[in-house]
Image (cartoon, rainbow, N blue to C red):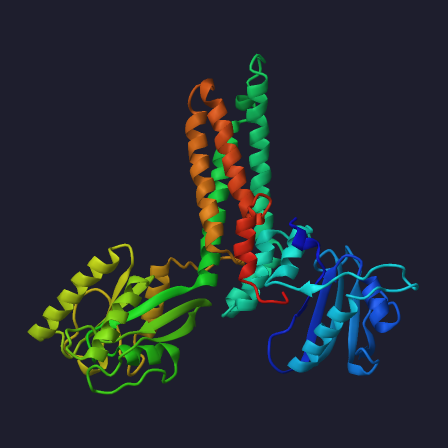
Length: 469
């Protein structure tokens, strides 16, 4: 632990702004003198006490509930004091300031101790201390932030599952099996003269194959969990007046973008997050793609291409009422070529044929999704196509929340296990390489739960938390 982790810290633990209730949280070692000096009494452990919170003159700043959690039976594993007061920002700031002042004074003859010197907590520091004091692992710590940031019910439930240890338990089970295999390999290296071939007798190859199968299942779940957390970035592109803004409004179920018959109405990006089967979908409406001499419209078109380059999927909208016109068809072909140049073929492009309600007798046979943004016909098919493009598969059981770094770590584990299989198939001279690949695989697994992690990684993770959490 760094030296700063030994400092007692304080912060407002509720969201900024006015509210019915606000919470001030303090965490550190030996907070009993602070409690005794401020309130003139001790507080019973884990019992809510209603009392005044006095200022320096003894006048109450507010009256509320005080809860004291002695270490190690607290969220952070340290002594924790929580004050529940009325949720006005001024009241909470006064409580923080008073607590900082009290903590700078000596407790006097009654305690014979120097009160801890508090400082303001950094973002995520309470959760970081819970991790450092082995109250939760790193995946569970990240799940706390994911639960707070969840934008759909499915994401919230998955984050709760990760917080309860669903993801960590599977990682631990996989790691335990990997450790047992490492023990066999190390034993063979340490005692090469033994007549018994430890690896053959223990079915090392079978254990390795079963490890790979369990890893693949975990990878699939983690990929789906990461999709629930991150969502997918979808950009609606096409020529002016193809119905892009109407499609955004139809998907969102609200009039978000201005719709007129005038070409070039949309000059800038319009974004909205929707959910499809619990998966967050970040939809971006863009300016119509065409050659333009209008300075403002040209900026909007440049921003449209910038959004397309960062998309996970592109909805290429075609206007059925004009798609047979030579000039319009040629422009669509040119846009399709530019899409390939900008994003390659790795990013899925879904052709969407709009205004089907206006040309019922002349529908195209081209692949894609046929719909009417005006009537809503075909929207369900489009939603299904988006989920398919994102790789979403409805889970048979519950999902846990995962992050991109978790998926990347599991991919490294997979790569090391593949190398291990190759070394195991070779002669005994490759056993040391086999042992090294298994060690690297275990390290990659440990990165997920934080059993093996760097201070830089922790800094990046916890800096994204809100202050007071």
